[in-house]
Image 1 (cartoon, rainbow, N blue to C red):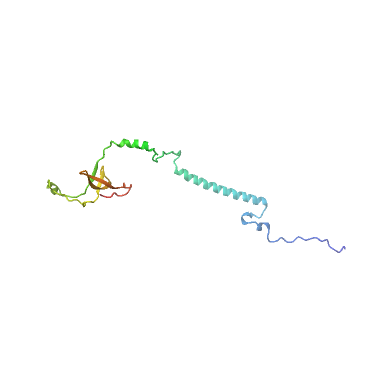
Image 2 (cartoon, one colour):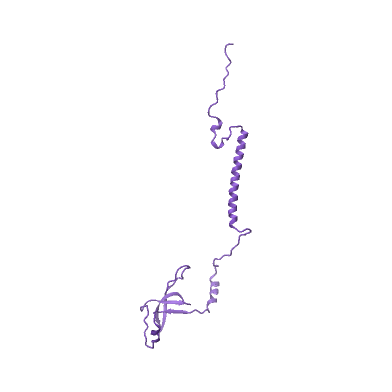
Length: 178
């Protein structure tokens, strides 16, 4: 039995796939050196990423502060919404306007005349208007067109029944010449 050699396994050559090859690319150290070198590289990459984030945050902050004057503080604006009032108080407030006088005109129609024709007018003259009998008349308050209505006779007096309220023109809209 002396002829038999001890059963010793010889080391096999390293397989082509090493631990580094099994790791994803992001975890593979740039230098195939010691673990110490790999840790140093990872720290440097983390510091670069942190610095990049810090630079972006500083740039955003600079843009935000450039838009505001230095020393500016937030201003609390008053509430411009109309206050909700109870009907009794609203009636009292509206009562302040009861004695305000307004100029109200009812326009039956219009016409254009030469000065010469106006000077020839007398007691029995007839002026033709641009509206037919039964057409609505225009109602003006302080020279502002506010409504249209129809002429009626009530107790031997002329009166006007309002048939349409004219909505005020919105800012920027052209007024409809009446």
